[in-house]
Length: 302
Image (cartoon, rainbow, N blue to C red; front, side, top):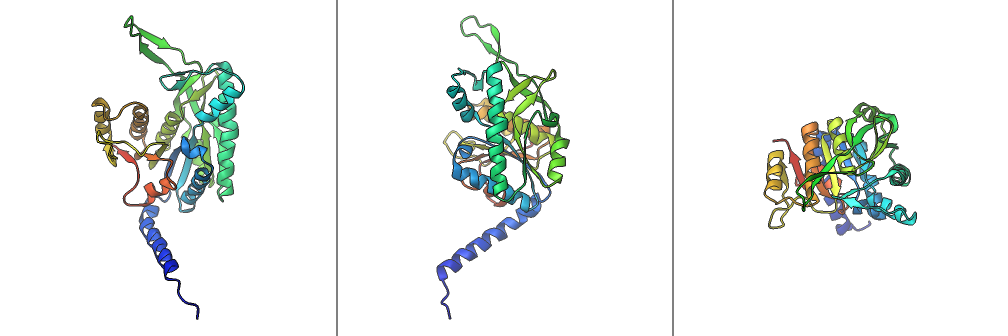
């Protein structure tokens, strides 16, 4: 008789315990839509990218409806550099002229989008790649930004070129796709009223999509643990009003402010909740959705 491998049995029992813990959460989210903004370090690491694709397939196989909206800033930057096209940023947004927006669309809707689709398909899913121009998915307008000149104290309008913001999302198109057991993968390119192509911040696009489809969860993958308090400790949960208060008192600052504002807009627009999580952690999406302790900072109404 073959002796029992006690170490392996302990591992099996541990895995069984994980499944038991996850089951109530799988039931809770069955049939619900989850919008995931994918970008940052998680997208640039091949191992993490493969695990992300497998996680999206798992979400679908347990009855959820994942929708992925991706970024691609570093890849765009590298392509512009290769083509000797100069690019500058104002307040974290890439100034996008006619030549630049063509490259942005090529990179986002082409290599990046199809690469994510291929990874999900390799993992056993059925993904379909879209840009916001397909089916009028993301209607956009030119983003207007102003800035106070420190010398004259006069408010000046900033011209960011073909940088846009969403004005309408065709949520019905995404719902139709997920009803066909497809995983939509969306590049944040918008279509203007007169046919213009607009480059949209991926966080902003994903938040608008989450609101439009009344997502059960909007998961914003970043390169940080979540929202930290003034002592550097993770804040696991915030209401919308509490989040605004932390922006006001300076606890939330810098690049985290637009991410929080995107989460707030998503929640107020129809999403049940938004979570900022660390995309550098393997299976972070699963840890957030299928464990009692969750991961990152959850922002809810209130």
